[in-house]
Image (cartoon, rainbow, N blue to C red; front, top):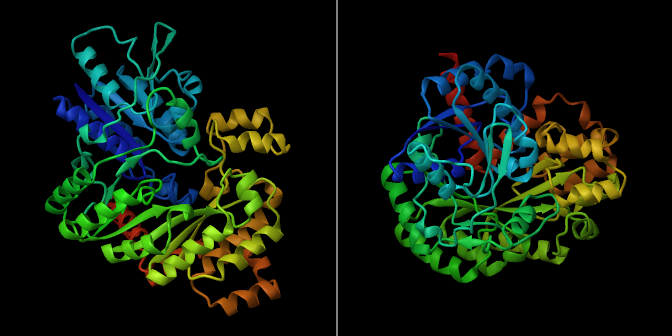
Length: 492
């Protein structure tokens, strides 16, 4: 089978794993990648520039020219509408089966399958399901009973259950990095995942839904063996010689015994700078020091709010501020660069709460605060919380399921009356890594930040760039290189 994957904006480990599995079963795989310059659904949404660099027509042509037997779109909520528009145009030109997979189709398959341009919706992890589909299509066998797929045939929808989850991640082929090598600067940053799943059930995240989805199918949280991960990284060093490694696990430090063994072997066999994501409950002084010694140049902590009541009641997170303080101080002691994720516009958020957030963060050395504007994702608990508070209704929830909300970097789901306040604090948070603690306190006391919303949109972007270069934020720097690379290609 000739299978063409289609995606936009960034490298996809999910696609790379599916491609590796398909190739192992002797299928031919191609990638059609739309860089989505200035409308990449991840970082930038600048409509005027997005129109200039729009590559949708090229993307559609590349899909058709690949002569596929099967077309696979991997989409999130933010890329879903883009995927539908491209798939609809492709379907007008060729009558090839189109699959939509990824987190958004998994959350709301009942909405996705309604689209005339979609033949199959893939739910959850689909390595085995996709192999079975290709095998049956090759042999011209019936496909309507393949687990993990909702399949549309003759105006009838066959809703198949999930198969048991793959508990042995070591049995899955290493991700097919060759697929993205012409689109992504892998030599700058090698992206890898050592686990699947998350130990937490945060209200704003789809992981809670996935935990419930797989409740009777096996443990959703699984980890690869240390030797398996090291083997992949050895191959990566030989093939791509990357400058840094980016571990994409939801909580890289959740298993201390695994981590200790891994870091020891990582230093011995790989010894490259890396970044990772952790959680305040899984980051203490001992772990921070070991990470730093092993070459970790940055740890990212999802905090989202410094208000304990908000975290407990709205975000469904149990850690206390003492855990945040412990983690922050651990990074300072280890001289480990710290990045914090924060969500603006949470239900019930007040300006006083935002001011307290600034004052809390200002007590510590934080090299970057990644600012996210609240965006509701389908089937997440925060939707029910907001509905019970009278902030959204059923019509709004329907729009969320259809992916008609703004993206988090374009205003998200933040209430209109709250946007000016959020813009002010968004700018102030970006200033925190650049100014002294004394200077930040002075800005807050004077209230001068209340006029920050008047700055042109380009100023906060430039601030991010300045912070990136000042604090050696390699990931952001590499993404700038990625953009420049594709801008050059687009102009040629």
